[in-house]
Length: 441
Image (cartoon, rainbow, N blue to C red; front, side, top):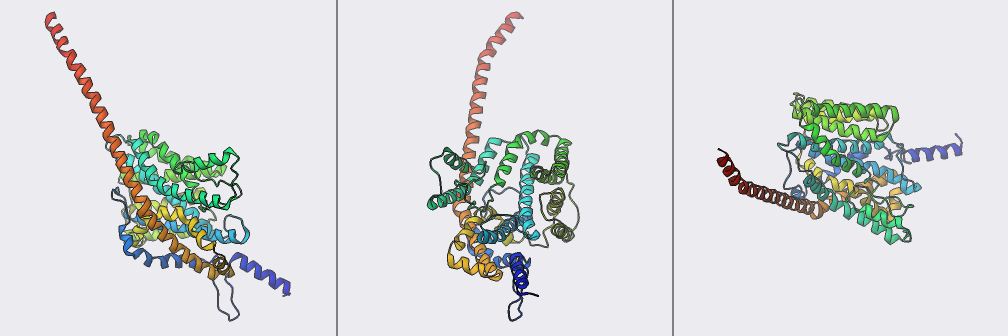
């Protein structure tokens, strides 16, 4: 083989992250090897046992399946690992694009897909279990205080970085318009103030507008939740419609609709006591087999097949699958409680070490050193998410609950006053009515 051919092969191996050997014959880590991702997650396990993690959680948690809480932490880490691989390409070429690895590409997309299913399951479940009409203004207010505080902090830091870099055009109205929309608790997502800049938040905020669209649709969905046939028919119709639409038109919007419909269907089946009555280990084995099939068969998750497979896995989890106790472990549940911070702050966590020239050069020297830096970055991300949970998220949720309670009391007081005034007017008219009746008799 010619020297030029050897050089070309070396560059291709380095580019695609194939495992290569050093001069002593020892095998080195490939950038796109699968096992480093699992190793990173496993090494974060001791971190979840810190005493400070005992304080995570919200005081007013609604009844939920413990496995779902444990699942969310690993989903957030999956999205972060997906972006960790993308970040390598970004550091070397300046391009933020989908990774050439099917595994790491699916890792992020499947994580987002499951998050969508979980959101629909939880909130459609609220409608199904409600004994009376749902107070939607209060629900939206509480969601704004659940999502908003940390979102505004992260977006504020991202825009602050742009201001420091002095790449913003202050002469155009569009700059101020973007800044305003960026601060609206995720309803419009985040758009960098400078069009030439890649999002400092790892471009994760694009999912939040879809979340808000689902929340805003709940008052309409509530109409169907009261009828025993419609509550099952609506998710099924939406799931079939999205499957056909995504298969024929290839639009990702149909996929997100289908994922929400899948979560709604799981909640309906649970409400109607139609879950699988199988041992949790058997359910876990089936769920694991489906996930392996998903990653072995597909290159992207935003397609009809993966959408239905993700819904099936989640249905098994609702039925009792806990992946042999992993999802219900206390450390997993604690990690799930800070999953929003892990998801939202990952871009800032990547930015901190890789902005140091010496660290960046060390990481880019080879794949093994890059994964070592990623391990430290993921540990930093978990600590950041933990602090953000205690300092920002929990106080925000508490404030939202206080305001919601005051609004409910105010609404009840106003209703009571209206009823009292109405009764007073009626009692004032009744004697006259009785007198007239007596006179007629």
